[in-house]
Length: 189
Image (cartoon, rainbow, N blue to C red; front, side):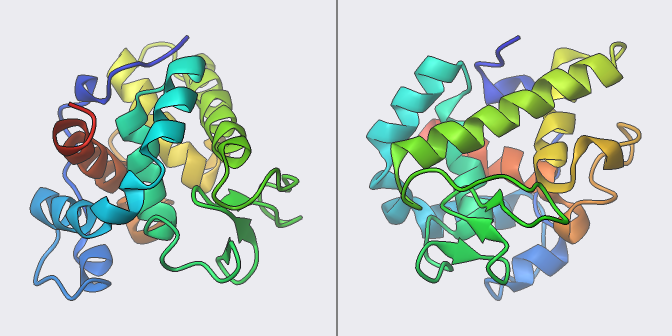
């Protein structure tokens, strides 16, 4: 099942105050997520064509890919030689290569289309897993759950009301969705 439009998710609350403080923003919420997306815009633009190809081919909204890139690596700005998370994650979308985490093998250069395809494929895997795990959730809820699972694993997504309970900052899917919706308007319109 492909989710082509991030706009199906209408209940995103944006970044937590903790995530917003990374940019010295006074509070969290949708405005904070949008400001962080705006801060990353010029860097994300460098990858626009690749993002669109991967999104089209894998049937994932390019704005969602951009939102994950913004959240995970600030479009590469926080990476050291392509590595982040204390050398446990690789590339723009931070594929977890840690044996105690995702245990993926890095593919391609950190800013390559091959990397984006791998990471987006991992997101698709979680879309499928969350869809099977929560058959009674709406398509929008499944997508938001899959975004949370991309960060924390599907085994740590237990309910929709607490979808971000175990994610970094306890806001991952809500922040990514808010950033993605901003990119949908300002980059992929």
